[in-house]
Length: 414
Image (cartoon, rainbow, N blue to C red; front, side, top):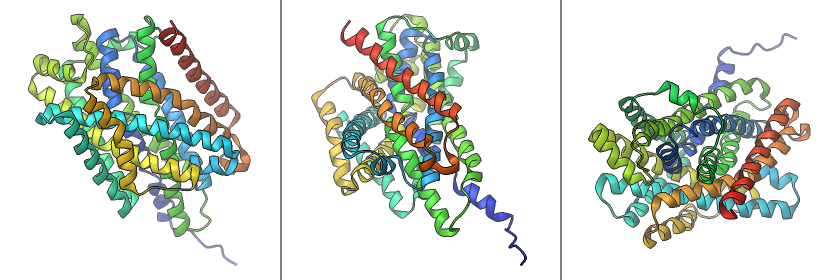
């Protein structure tokens, strides 16, 4: 019997179908919390913490690749795999902390969108928070018509963010020697540790570790419907390229934020601790076009990241508990803390920075189960991690935990 010859177009179509999830994940790495922490770090410490952004981005590449690989290999997301493999008390604990992470995430995103609307149109912050929540709900509504529509919309908002930051970075100028000097790991006291932890929390976002595996598993399930029994191993290359490009762009955006602040604000000796101050000083130093580009990038970040955060909340509950809430109800629940902060008059930029610190504490609770699952041949089959990959991932997890413990001892107890 003559073996069937596969059409050359079929492998190309398979590979093309795996692109997209990393661009949604990338939004979480350029959310308003990144704006707050990166501009604050550059303003106060110059290029000192550039190495944290580089390290965080390398960590993000590893984490998101493992998350995507889990979704491809199993056809299930990280919370679903945890529910199937771990004891019930562990699953409930993971779910509880993941929900707290989702709340902290949404706080940063809604507050960021509210600040942007205030800068652009003068809307009161509580009104801007409601508008941001509604806009995010509208973007997320595209998912009901197919995940591709949602991914395209989010990628479009990502493009707005990148263009806005690129304009400001070009206008500010690039100090290559300063950037290179900032890649040497060092701290300058507890305040720099706090900001470094915030940058890390804003760079490696726990909720998007859950979400990326869900998006990739949805793509894999589509391929299963089209081509039952398709070979998964050859698609790893497509996942790697998707993650490298999507997260690489996000890493450049983070570096641009710190570079702009280090280049313009740090030399003056005046700390720029709020996003409003960043906006006004950009306008004064580079012109109103630069201030507008910054505000538009922040607005796109708030709208896109809030929709991604709500989507992640759905994945977390459905995966860990096999339960779900109506989307409008979940949007309302996660919106409440952000609205409370805005109505109470809490400094929004400080709220953003502290939300990122909270997120950094959630990283191990997503990352450690991810390492355990992707290391297992029983779970992953031929796509299980190599020993070196598991070793590197374990070292990274240990470093994150150690940095958080150091933060507690130096800032909260010192």
